[in-house]
Length: 608
Picture 1 (cartoon, rainbow, N blue to C red):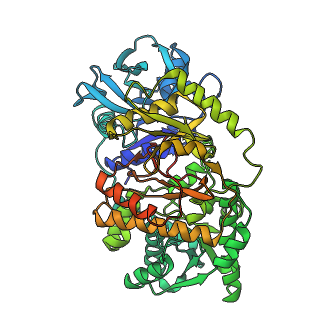
Picture 2: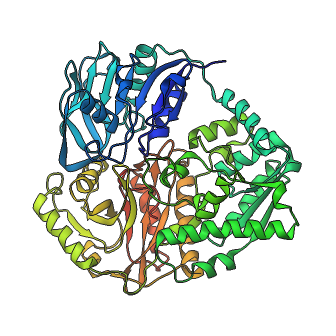
Picture 3: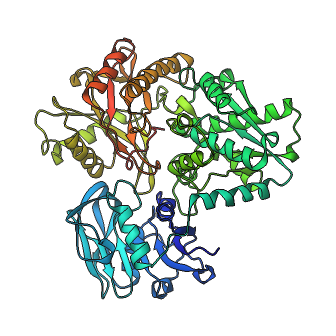
């Protein structure tokens, strides 16, 4: 069957695959193509989307054939694509003084693209440039306070541009906008289902594997578990070997739980290997987050090769299987124009080398977490396995921030600069009285405007926390102060003590990991007790080398999301948060307890 298709030209946005995912969710096949692809080669093409990008239209010239805009096909430009349409058709762009990230309110105008929308709509922004002057024959169909031309249209030629991202879940009516484009503008029918994809991927697995078997690293999370089930179904248990590596970086009792839950699910071809000593020895003294990720990823491959030798497996007869999903590849710069946000453990150099040699099989690499869960249901996996909270492959190794004496550099000068900036812009006083603010002399990874950032967190506190005000304050700070990519609430001891806090020399150690395991177990237990495990997408707990009298501090990072490309901090009920804080403080082993109230972007879900 020749499905109708929407072509997404990929300019490198972190959200590009999410565009295709949304159309598939609507029952319309969408695929990604290079920016200069010859669209005449696509059968049954009904529309084109120009994606966002980490680049600037004025500064970064990606190969693009402007004849696409004269093809007669419906066109939808998003963020960078919106600006690209304007520039190529005679409009004018401008660079904004402050980049805009996070939620904004769109005043909706008349357009078939916005059928069913009314008044102010919450949309998700992530940009620096904007359209200042419309191209000829275009009209403005939407604006926000910070972006007068947030949406434009040439209805006669069916060309539309949106400065915001309708593909992310935090644009409230984003799916409705894409539905209007697909059904009312492109005249699409619903002829695409995940069941079709499953049948197709099973054929692809058999074709790629040929006469070879697959050695799969199984973490026990939903991705690797679904991948395990899919490979077993396609190739048979006798042709798949599953290995769970206990790295010593796991959560409390995790290896035991993984073995038990997978055995209960009927998997008989799984082995567990204890490699805690190896991983901890290789990470000793390492503080830089990217280096930690690469070491952990490399060790996974080394252990796999060691086990293969022990079992006398002929390398020519085996492929490496991985439960890689799309966010892993895009944040590692997995498409031609994407920026590297962080290197995932399944995208280190050795894995990339094996991929280039055709020795890696990744059946889920084009799917998002929600699709993986849906596929898990189709494969008959239990709710318990499907809804297990995501846990990163490098484990607690990237939730254990490290610091080496002498690494701080001019952190104190940067912190003072930030404090002066906050005093000047007076952003906190706009929303609350009696509020205090500070800057921590540590850094974490973020994503701003599709680029990787490595910046400081700001800490705020006021007597009565109002989550709606927090929702406004957090993006105001990160939008206006480029040296900050996270905002934290101080939910523990007195704010005045934060100024006395100091960086603590610390690396990866069993002692620190055990403390983090205990704190993580407290947070997870209270989440389950409150029946919030399906509401909270993920709940990282981070140990940071900052505090008083040598005691470190904790960051609580609960988020809600659908596919991990965007996320909102999760506002825990006061009773649940208070119980978590009370139990952590009763350990008498930490200084401060912070609550990360940063959305993604500008903060990634994990800190490293």
